[in-house]
Amino acid sequence: MKCGAWLLACVLLASAATDPAQAIFEHAVQALAAGDYPAAERGFLEVLRVQPNHVGAIGNLGIVYARMNRNDQAITEYQRALRLSPNDESILLNLGLVYLKEERHEYALPYFQRVIALDPQNRKARQLADVCRLYMGKVALAIQDLERLRADDPGDGQLLFLLGFAYLKNGDMKTAREYLSQMLEAAGPDQAEFLMGKASYEALNLQQAEKSFLRVLQLNPDFPGIHVELGKVYSGEHRAGDAIREFQTALKKNPADADANYYLGCELVREDRFEEGIPYLEKATKLAPDSYAAYVYLGKAKLHLGQAGEAVALLRKAVELNPDNANAQYTLGRALEMTHQKAAAAKAFEKARRLMAESNAQLEADMQAGR
Image: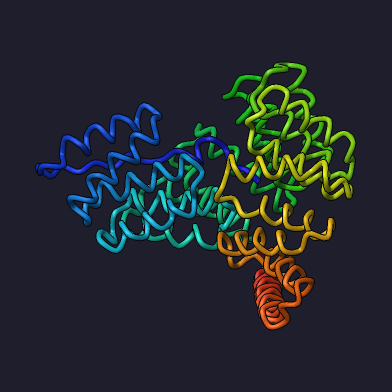
């Protein structure tokens, strides 16, 4: 699941220090603002060769990697920056955003909470923390805080969307419709329908999501990302043929769409069309090299084709990027077993079992708490 563009915005960092590396730093900041990420990376690395503890260069390097979808490196740089400046709200926020983009909500939430502890009035951090709570099943807590935020700014469109989504997750359709209707009044018709579709999809109301996305296509056939979102709905409804068609349409419009390549490859693998799916998944790993999920599906495809050795390498990469994903650990265990690495396979299976047990225990605790 992807969050809206507002969730992905990064905060530019700057250093006010005057030093020999300042001109290089300023040029790198300009390159970052202009979207020239390779030049920005070179500049910040040059600054760090002169001043290894330059927090501005480290933090901005994290932004460069995040925008290039090199999330693993972004996390490393942000954590390095926080060791030098543990209460830097911008760095804390950016690190949380990287984890949020990877849908690792339990990792993202503590960083947003630290920002809130430093600045209780930080609305952005509070909304992002509530997004994490919604995906972690802590719906009641999220609604409580979102309602407090709404009282201060009743016309905030993003907040209305989140509240509509939250009440959908909570099964309160009447209240959800009220908030989403208010949101629709504040947005253009195509954007409003798209947001309605996203909220419905995230709340697992696939029938309503399909209706909204089809309406978007009627209003604006070139609406960005609409074919991928509609394909995801069809995939959730087990309509593989329709899903494949939508992902292929998205790729005709933009062959470099990382999401379309990933979802098309996954759908083909699920349909046992392994050889067809592999090229799309391979392209997805090149376009988004730090996204673990494409490596998992690529490893599964290789396993089914009897290429267990290649599968091991791909799945090791997946668990390196996300060691706490039970599916990746389990699939790695299968690949290791097929290559007669019994001890390593047993270790991977045990890690998968432990992760599943922890997940189930957390789910049960949330249900008992009424969240």
